[in-house]
Length: 199
Image (cartoon, rainbow, N blue to C red; front, side, top):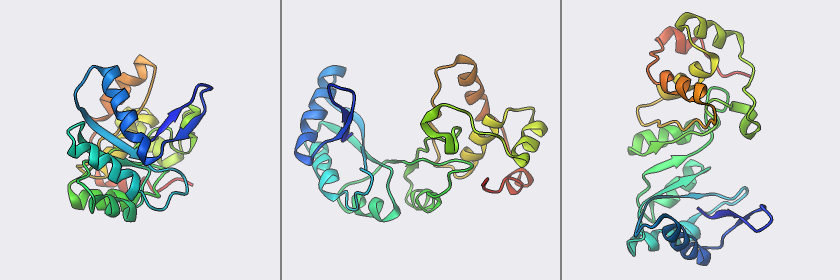
């Protein structure tokens, strides 16, 4: 919440005083009295999220929102948000070859906050939709488990901490089935040790 498309499809960022209107519009469109979770996505280059998160905290106090989350934040920004209101989830890009948010994952685990990584399968490919190439160690682990490299990427992500709730996106039923099956894969310590960050 905070980012939406204008009439021409371009993204723009809402000011804190515009967030109530966005929440009310979401409620109207969904036919609901309360949104279960609203995530505040940090704008690139934005240092402090206090003003925007504070506006959402006010809407939580008013009963329009049940829980609050944050997205694309650092540990300092998560701490800043927690000083304002409880945070139930953090949505950051994270995966086998996107590990810059390891400190955020650890901070969430320590605080009992769900860590919800995006791009866990796409990795460096991000929004392109292309599946990244599989480095040798990833292929070796995939062969041992009779799985695809994408399933091992997802299983690796889920193995990082019990508070990880991955959200791989797909429009393909076969990929959806693979993603669900990846949750049942049990990687051994040897598997995990053999999967260093790809470069």
